[in-house]
Length: 446
Ligand code: S3P
Image (cartoon, rainbow, N blue to C red):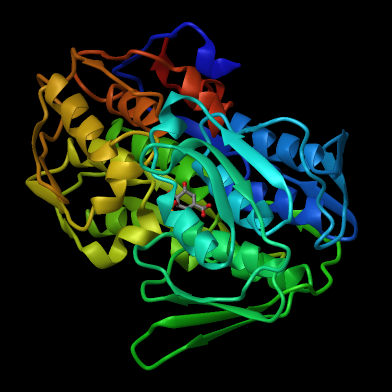
């Protein structure tokens, strides 16, 4: 298992122009959900473009442990699901490795079953708060049989004979919490309602509708979303083509903006509006990003992105944009390090509970490489140095966080001195092809 492997440092060096075409792997959020919903639905689900990162594979293993049949045939994953309400009690703890999405959504999916399920994970995942998911599950009648202090993993859940439908207002902007409650609602009689004051990624809603769930969304005058799901309905297997992950696309994208004379095209990127905050921000900063061939692919917007090196300038990134770029702040910080003036990012409270405390990890990594920045309680400001003269030369602690690792390797492609990261192993959780893809475009990483 990678999370027990020896740390593998990596070094990024100032690179020649990045050129060429690239395709990033499938979207992580959609890939997790494809395995989950395919494993749950009746009949066959066929998936192409799936992200074969470690996090998603853990979700696949969990679904297999609960009765789904999952196999790969050529480029296609074929799943035979158990049918809604028919998951089996796993015989061993479900090990989710580094994956917050896999574990939190699965807690919702199985929590309401009248069986015992234990969740374990690596050191990063075991430090993350699970109370945000356990709290609504408790209201539905789920018992938390065991948990480490602070509602942390290892966690054992036991569902009631009959779960109670609830109306739950999500207290923080979190697609994982929203999704966990909706998935718990699938195995609950009656209608479970989730109220979402700030819209987050809507893959659960869209995909469940695609699988045939009786799910409706109403948005009130204040812009608050009310999501209704009727439990115990039938789900039917689907054919899914997973589009490229915009969060992964962020790495070559920022690299091409900051490495002089670059010109790359990233093909087939998901453009769902709940995921495009980074793109908007980089365009506001003066980034030369062309959106080519916008099209519909299986109900999702996708496009190709042509990116050329640009002179960036600092901007204010408002808190309201955080949900649509929540995983992209570390790589935005790398872009901001080369922008003229200050970039101020607001509303970052959720960054503190990601795979690492990303706000602190980014600030320490920037400081180690001579980038002038200020970490606030929920803000980060970065004062950039166009050209990157004098920057770099530091070693970054990645804290088992794939996005910290990739963001600082991107930074090092344009700093005067090399940037070292202490461990590249975790990159495999979300973007196993990262090193090869970046080198193919011309990046110097060793
Ligand atoms: C995800 C939701 C986000 C995001 C994560 C994937 C999802 O987490 O950071 O990488 O697939 O639902 P939160 O719900 O904690 O914001």
